Length: 401
Image (spheres, rainbow, N blue to C red):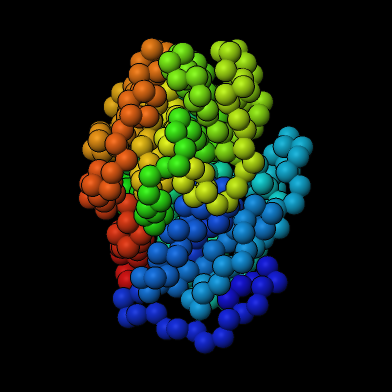
């Protein structure tokens, strides 16, 4: 069932089981962009487990075509975001929390819910998702849980945002608890909060997509990077190592899928490999490029406290392709990769020679079914059924369910 999105209502409501609950998930993105895709997987897993789920999302940043008998979608218009200074000023004058999507959070706060949930679960990033969740939890007097998919402030930045942290601390203090994706992130995140929520910080990991077996790749030396680069996660170390690797493998190519050209092509030109780095269009069907790849690539944050466990690493470990991961020593990604050393090369330095050796080792890995069978045990904790059970137990036990 859907509201605000002009979607048809499916007839025949299936009653949830006696131990089930009703969870409202507030996330600006749903079924689109990394956070929205992760949220979509969690919602489906909770529905499969027998729970009722309501999602409040931003209409312009979500896919709104999912239907289920126990699912309600409020796709709320986001509207204007700029100029930010104006919205911050209006929020201050009204005594509201600001945020980058002020009009959206105002609309979310006024939502009339036909069915009141047992608990409200705000999933960020961005922080607007938390603001909306906090408003709904207070309006309907329900427990509030907050999920930080990325810590705040995000390392390597450690300078607190003076406009965000004061209200974020207050929100966390009145929340039932906080969830994060791994223990390192929990340790990092909670040090920024003066008052700890009653439920503390709990681990709710990413849900892995279904396993895919493509068989041997039809392409050799086809390295595929899926996603974006950013100032915090630049491509320089990867490209420098690739340039060194191409001295002995001149046919090698990197395909960057959905990457902004201005993030990668100037770096490729700087290292003399512009003709070997290709920018491919964004696609929702990343399995097409996973199948074409001889090796998948992932670049973690290479500065600051190592707290991230990238969604793309989880996704890459669900297909039968070698993975080359650049990360920091001691990162959650390294810990996971080290359990799959027969199919994953983990490089924990930016030195070009070491990265080039990583390319060589990954390209030479035997693509045999037995190697990938061993990944299944490693990836079991990321299975949808297990994560949904952890999430429901965490959220609903605090409501007396």
